[in-house]
Length: 207
Length: 234
Image (cartoon, rainbow over all chains, first blue to last red):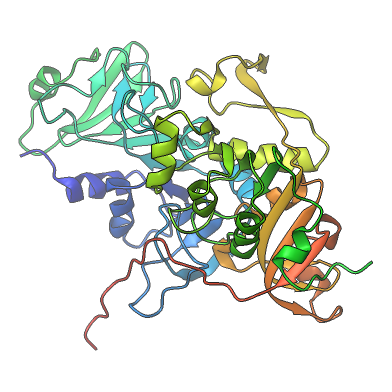
């Protein structure tokens, strides 16, 4: 059985080590926070916060306290706030250990496309280009194939890029792959998924 | 010199002109200068260029100036929540320059700090890098981004003293300090103006040197996405 959204998030949480400062993207990456267990992971919200807490209880929402997805959140005892230039200074300066992000396409050289589809409404890249260029490690969590069964792990991205050669590790519903010299390397298969299954579902070169 | 003005219209008197560039603080609808935006709408200033991370929603934030066709160009990182914005953009009536979020913030900070340009890795190899100078440092490629100096900065803070020292609250700080820094003139709106001496000098987030005019007012502080969790049973 391939992994579902929660299992992918649970697997991604294994990448995080105690004491890390991490930025989680929108979608499945947000779920990773549910699986960090006893590890002290400090979540950065790039609009200007380290130490992001859970959603507030109903009636306790604060309009001055939102995450980068513009959702109301809460603070923790270790929370700090800062302005956007400082926030991206810590991203650009390599202080954030890892970012876990979604993707539309990843290429075998680590190119990432996750911000626009030509011909469709373009909303903007937000902080994605800064994150992939600046953080220590870029971990992508994504479905291995499209709804039509086409591989999203490609020899070359077809969509406009968010960054070139930036992805380190890919966690899909089929398993875990690393970007290495010459292509992608299978690190782990989801339960009941074989390396041959992954090869068959992947356009990118598997080394 | 007195910085405190009675209201937004008075604080903007004499500083608005058609075709000007305005840097605005805020992230989504959080920490936006809502009173000053409403006053700009009323003033009817046209052909505005806004450096602002977002463009508000249809009936709040910069969105209210899109409705009245007062905006010619947006310099933003994300504009997804505004139907009128998309309509004008697709119809070719509105220009947009997408900036990576950190690049936009640093462009404001740099412009305000007298730095006309800086090199960053952000955007290398993407559409953002097209037409920009590339330079290698220590084996890595960077692109040149320009500092932004705006004709006017409009920002929102929590508290101020009458000399313009500002304190922000939680994530409502966001783009407000860098936006304030890059304005030739900066007008700030706050929830409360307190007498000088009542703010701890060690706790000032933005020194009053960046703030030229100041108003106090009631803020709606609309929430874009209310997200809550259920209380566990006791």
